[in-house]
Length: 290
Image 1: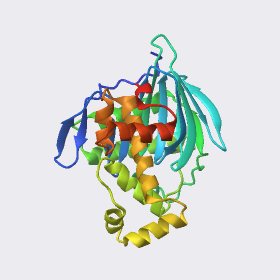
Image 2 (image 1 turned 90 degrees about the horizontal axis):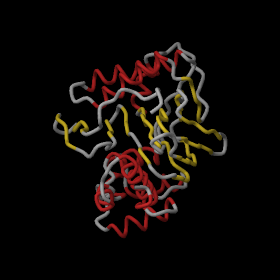
Image 3 (image 1 turned 45 degrees about the vertical axis):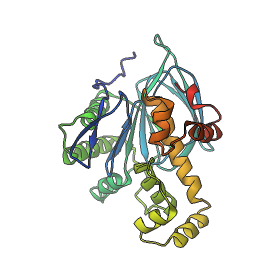
């Protein structure tokens, strides 16, 4: 491995906010902490192309092994394990090309996201700051201080002994370290209806969501929800499928789960139905990701 490798424990557990404890998960399972952050360690042995991947939240990417190609209408770059971080604005669509390289012939990365609530909290605490808004995608050198701060945060996310309050301060410290380098994510703006729906669905992709249930949770009727989504040129069922397929892709990249386990985690009781949806979305079978 390249010396950019952070010192992280194996991902075998994830906090369970409902019980205050931890729940066992396969090694590498993604973690999502509502209102704070998300964290995953994608690992691939095969080259993979991902068309139109959606970065819902502000994201930090560190390529530990392999090469990442990223392109969209405004950006095109190639990143490898060269001691740099990749910062992606929330709401960014991009085509990704992941290529295994190095002695172990693998692709591995750290994928850390910041919630909109956390960004809003950070920006409220810096009323007089005038950071430069981040381009859609930007890369920055991973110096010693930034590497130490990032390692501190990632280990805190993985620790069952760190409270959410302490983790929040550590995440804010990482955002401050980036701001000191002239890097800041978009100023917080009220989310669109589609982004609010997407966030709700992504918190529990396996749940049998209906437009009526989501509308009620967002304090509007089903008809109002569908009308607002239509105004944003989005349909509820399309959003649900998209969220589930992104979740399935991340699980396939970062866990040892079987296809049927991934399908169930995405709300599908039928492996065949999940495979059909996944293949239509990405252009290849879920088994080809393993």
